[in-house]
Structures are given as C-alpha cells and as structure tokens.
Length: 340
Image (tube, rainbow, N blue to C red; front, side, top):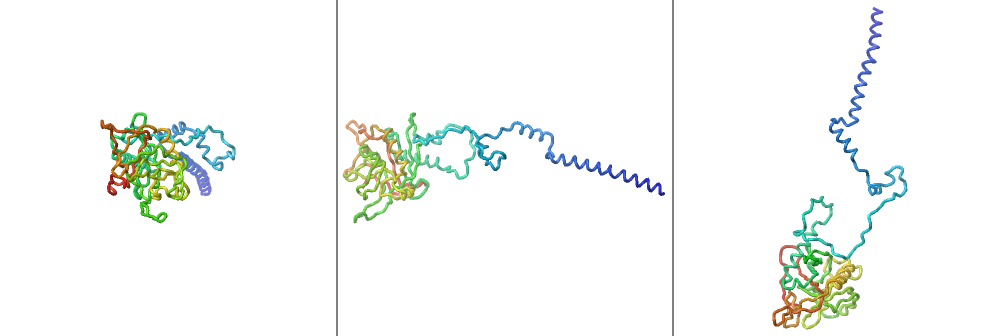
C-alpha cells in the first residue's frame, strides 16, 4: 500500500502540470483571438485593405495638430505651400436665381448656424421688385435696388442689389442692412417734420453724386457717398439720398429705422455702390412724368414725345424701389401714386 500510495502520488503530481499547461494554452489562444477583434476572415481582410489604401494626413491637417499632440514636433515650423489669399472684391457675386440654376450634384448638409433663408429672401425681393417696375422701363436699367423700409419681418431694413449680366439676365449682386426713416412727426428747429422714407420707384440724379457731403437741413450731418434721388416734390428738389451711415452709433443701428428719411448703408457698402453706379451704369434713362403739383411720379410713369416714344435723358441706368413690406405675403399700407 505504501508503494501503491507513493506511485499514485507520483502519478497525480505528473498529471497536474500537464492539465494546467493545456488549460493555459487554450486561454492564450482565446486571448490572442480577442486581441484582433474576434472578427471573421472577410471583415479582417477588408479592414486590412482599407488601412493599406488609406490616404496619409495632409500637411494642412498636420499643421492643425498642436505640438503637444505630436511627439517630437516641438516648435519646429513645417514648410507648407499654402493656397493664395483671396482679396475682397467689389465685383458681382454671380448667384443665379434658384429657378435658373443649373443641375448640380447633391451637396452635403450646410453647417449648423448657416442662414439658408438668404436665397429665398433674395428671390422674394426680386419678385417684388420686378412686379412693381413697369415692363416698359425695366429694359433701360442695368442695376436694380430693392429696399424694404418695414420695421419687422425677414425683409425689414434690407437692400437687395441686382444687376443685368452680359446675357441680359437679372442676377443678384449683394444684400446689405440699411436704416430708413424713423416714420415719425418730429420737432426740428421749432418746426414739425416727417422723418419718412417714401415708397416708390426712383431714379438717381447724375448731377448730385457727392463723395463727401454735409446736410444743411440737418445741422451739417455727414452724408458721405451721397446719391440723391432725381425727384421733385411740390416744385422743390428732394433732399432724399442713399448715403453712408457715419459714426459708430449710426452704424450700430443699421437694420433698424433710424434716419430722417434717407437710406443709410454701412460706409464700405455705400462706397462700393457709389463707384459701381458711377463707373458702370452711365447711359440714357426715361424721363419720369410730373403731376399738376410738380411732383415726380413715383410709380414709373414716363413722359412721351408726340409719336408716343419714351423721352430719354442722360443719367444712371440704376433704379431704386422702396416699399413697406416685411416679407410676409400680405400688403402693408396703402399705395400712394404721388409724392405729397
């Protein structure tokens, strides 16, 4: 029994290491399999091919990583061939209206916060503008300015500029915030005045375009890059103009009613528009009719000769349309035919 017991003990001692070794081997295989993701051969091969064909990080992407994230980079500059800087230009932003835009490949969703309503608003302004400017005079103009003097709504206190391209199409040029009249009866130098911006269709006076101007009626208030209307009001020349908002307080108020009746623009936009009109729109324009009060017609009626042809004069082929419309499909306020 002692020998038998000794032999059993020796046999058990030899059996244990073999079992443990076998179990550890199985465990190692399982661990090794899990370390590669426990994937089937087709998935593993696909990922391997993707990794082999992956494009390297571009120089610009490497530059975006901070030196603390890239070991060994430190503050050593990376030589890159950067794209050339694009300088701002006052040239046309060639934006074809949506209904005329050519078919293009689907684009990714715009980034969060991007104002995607600009194109619909531009289209709305364009429709409003050309529904109001009579067809018989539209062909005489190459630049069209739409202004909403409303104090609310998506179109409120904006100017949309459109131009005729080389093919004769009307395309958007730009859109800017403005300030129109305060629309109040106010006391100025002990007399009551209305700070209204009139609605209607207006031409610009080629003899009253001033790079620097100060208003005599409003205590020498600056009206730089002034473009005065070609407008008579009860036999007197109107003092209404499109001009720059001068001073930080006035610039901050763009997008709100704030003027005495003129249309104010940011100085850089007023300057751009001033030179664009002077340099690109000179030509013959219709002579607008006058009523019995010697006020210029504000809705596009024209003078004609004995043969019925439209009378023309030298001027700027630019027309301004102002209305009190807030961007909603409803009529705001009555239509008045003449300046009072």
